[in-house]
Amino acid sequence: MTQRTKNFSGMILAWLWAGIPLAWGVSQTAFKAKALFR
Amino acid sequence: MFKFLDREQTVAKPGYNRWLVPPAALSIHLAIGQVYAFSVFNLPMTKLIGISHAAPDDWKLTTLGWIFSLAIVTLGLSAAFGGKWVEKAGPRKAMLASACCFSGGFLVAALGVKLHSILLVYLGYGVLGGVGLGLGYVSPVKTLITWFPDRPGMATGMAIMGFGGGAMIGSPMSVALMDHYKSATSMGVWESFLAMGLIYFAFMLWGVVTVRVPQAGWVPGGFVPSAKPQKLVTSGQVSADNAIRTRQFYCLWMVLFLNVTAGIGVLGQASAMIQEMFKGRITPAAAAGFVGLLSLFNMGGRFLWSSASDYLGRKLTYSIYFALGAVLYAFTPTTGHLGSVGLFVATYAVIMSMYGGGFATIPAYLRDIFGTAQVSAIHGRLLLAWSAAGVAGPVLVNYIREYQVTHGVAPAQSYSSTMYLMAGLLVLGFLSNHLVTEVEHRFHDLATA
Image 1 (cartoon, rainbow over the protein chains, first blue to last red):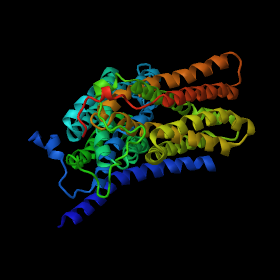
Image 2: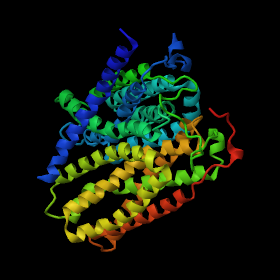
Image 3: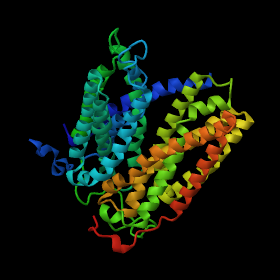
Image 4: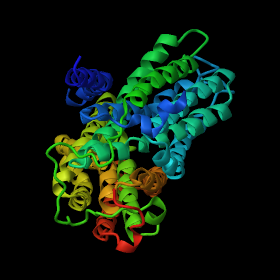
């Protein structure tokens, strides 16, 4: 595996690690915020 | 065995992609940001003995309120006093210490809940967890700034955005865990603390393992540092001990303190305010939705405003926070008089985005004024302003409101004076920011990096 491939796959994994919980939290909050517009 | 934690072991190899570093910082900030969601445990913790109702020996809400306050005060103190150690130890050791303290805090608090000892909960989540918060908050700052010399505002904004997002993860996760563990004999609180301690430790460990510092003298490809001196961007380096001897440090301290005091003050009463200003039109569920929307703007503002500061300059960005903020705070009561919910929500949303932006832009401002050499330690010392604002903001707002209501002012009207006072604080902030100038050469006591 080249350094470039390692970097790329590492970056995808790293952003998923932080991004998935954040996206889940944001979606939960956005869902709650929807009540304001009903 | 612990050599792995040394700064030397974290130096990146040539060709390392710097975009791997922000997720490492995020994994710390997303975890410790949970502190803002701690209040979801308060109500269940008032029924630990009675389960379906509060028993006489159950803890009172006033007793429980101290857990959060202790954690925030300890955050400020540990960032202030531990900042120099963070500089010396490097990001990996500091992040691991943060993970151990923050998760350990949960575990000790779990024992405290199980044994029904409030002292253990205070010492656990409040003190030990608070140390984890302080060390974790400042640990990735310098690393990010050195990896992104071309966009320091954006880089630190990303991490500090994580702190805002942490509450959005912590709140629903806590509720889900308590629902899962709740039984006829338990509210599920200690079990949730135990689970969260372990989950957060594993989550933060990713940051510990993946964080890297650049090699000395590294600059990103294509980046040429400006040869021409930039206004308010120093080429010198000031130590943390020297920084606190400068007028600029105290001006920035006031900048952070006033921005946070005004923001925390109105954030705490947002739900009650919208319901009382628009009586009969806003239900409690809609008000909760409003608070959720503000959290999104608070988080988004951290990233967007601090990224914008890379182009606008730090001083101008704060001038916008304070000038536009003062106008919007003063305008909020008018939106209530006009009966426009949309305008009220939009005004509040912009205010909250600038409140978040104020937190996220400060590390880059410190780097501009004092250099990168000890920016984490200087940032840590400045964070005491946050602890002070955490006490001053709510006290100021609640006291003014109570005084007015007891003197016959209608609840809906009582918010007007609060908002005008907050606008006044922002005018003071504007002046403090105006006084920020370059640090005199005699304070440049460290070698230029």
